[in-house]
Image (cartoon, rainbow, N blue to C red; front, side, top):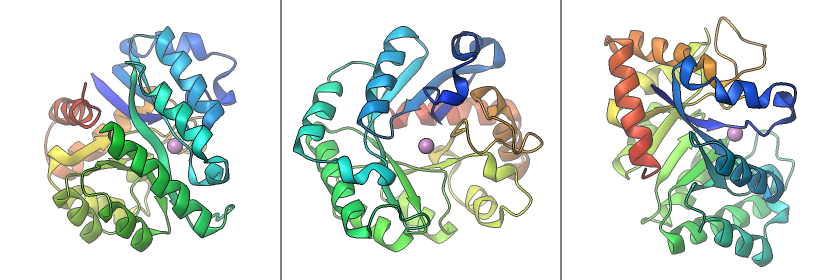
Length: 252
Ligand code: NI
């Protein structure tokens, strides 16, 4: 069974068929899903969904696009939500200089505040980092006891090796299956298999040949097939190893 380490099943794209889709995941080969919060409101939704479905876990946190909501009150609610036994990580948190909807200094402050919370609670984090490789690496280095996953990894293979040496995991989405995915492919072939986790980031980022469609955890087998091809091992081995990795990452 595969483990989708990053999904947004609370997204409105799933409104028409959410329950059927989630109930059908084990039959589609997906045993577990980490449903990731992006802001206070979606984090609350994620916790509620994790309470409803045994195979769904939750994370809570504010994405860089919602960095301006992060204050002591929001952190207090995250701290409280983290007491729930299905909440397994803080995220997604980080930096996004590609869209840069929120000024960089505010993104960095929110990222640091949430890393501090993870440090205090000794929980893993889910990092979203886009076009902010240097600052992202610099900030996580300030929190040496905090690790987790760099999701939808887009940095260099060299940076991934540094992160792995610091105890981090690297998450790959459907981007791995895209024709122009040179960076992701180079990284996925050059770091230890024990540090790789698979994710859909659904409803976005559907893998080939479904690119452009609504993504869902049922497409995760495509990432597993691609990784098996790149590493010269069987899909079953990829399944076993990446699922073990995900369980270690989220301490299940
Ligand atoms: Ni995401």
